[in-house]
Length: 561
Length: 47
Image (cartoon, rainbow over all chains, first blue to last red; front, side):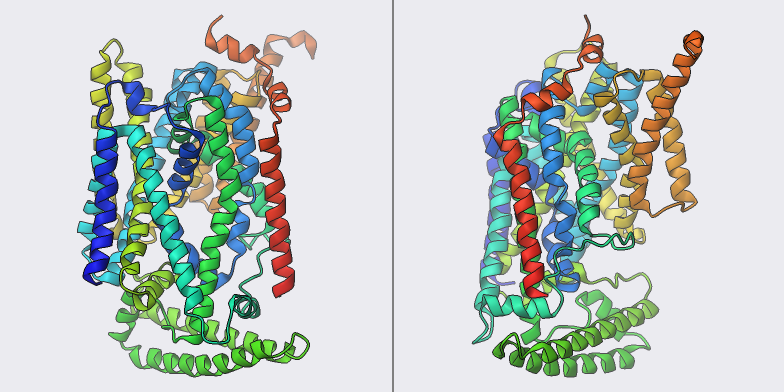
């Protein structure tokens, strides 16, 4: 990193923090601090998008496209459908009841204990996720840049705490505008440079042809294979379901659209998200595909994670690893020659060469898989899946001075934008659903002060969790599992609240508790892949509550049977 | 009538859904279908 990179990185991050803090320094009421309610549709839309886009979105997604192509975009096909449902059903009701949190609505519909239960489930799940949102980019950047992991966690967390505790929801909204600009600006610049760096005679169209030959442009998969995580069907059905639970019941998103100055502004913000999310993900994946094309003409490492390479090179497997690396280099030269031939020929003449390219790709994949096995044998605690490191490796080794600083600012901005929404939501839920609901009769100033303290507390907890996260194996998966254990149950409760009028609070609460026990048992005894626990929890709580209500109805009106 | 009773008696969610079927909601679904169509074309052309 050169001085200009440091200047851009530090300058942009400090500007966002100082501007956000200064712009929202006059927060006098709890409503101002937690709700905002002055954002227009554009600010709401940007805020919703910036909350969902974490650093992993920008660092890991291009790597996903590099290895597995663009199929991941299918995961977002259900999102626009979910946006429409949220605009028509969720937003009008939340606004009508003038709630601060989504869980507050559940007390109006059911009772206090259901509200408290869902609020606590949210706090557990989102509290852990906030730590990971800080930890995940910190570990990647510390591995490639050699920065201290502990200090990176503390730095990211502290910067977010400063403006989130000071300015609340408004500060989150204000800073997310700039953060989104840095994120998309960084990605756009990287894309343009990738186009410029293409070898002479290779234009964008040829680049797509090369990516296609490598199987990276198989965007749609209509198969019904349950083992394939990203298909058209899982995207449309599972994606709608997942987006509905995330945007409809997760306070970190609900709080974003409740900050709109009217129902219409909140709805239009969500519609903006529905319009832009799929093309945005497509663009990020396209950057990854262009990185793939770039490495067809430039040598790439056997494994992009420098820590993994270091581990295996310091082990007894070093010679074997070196030998695979040599084979990879020979394969690279052979494939580069084939690709040059492939783009120079007509479609009718090049099918034989295309088959040879596919074969060379297959060989490369086998070499990389073999290398992963060696890394695992050398040190089973090291992350062998290097998709998180592909894009940052390209950035650090091939982008010009200044741009490196911009891309690093992009990653850290993304981490900060997601974390700030999470801390804002955690502080709000603790203050409104747990504290204010149980400690009534205090002044407005008291609740405002407590909201700030709770936000600070969650910020400190997130940093502590990020700092100890390294001690656990496969932590990100663990957090996803925790999310899957709780999300389905919470969504089921909300769907009952919205659509099943005859269900009483008692049936819902008992069903939710029983469902939670069953879902945990399902995970513990490995009844199904953990992602399906979402659907299982949602369906079980709904069926059980409806069943209980029906049985109660039969008991009360025995003559009707 | 308290809020709880109001919500339980308020059965107009589906009416609201039909009434508020405004162009923006329709367009976002049409745009989604157009994106999928574009991806289908890309998949067919480059594979």
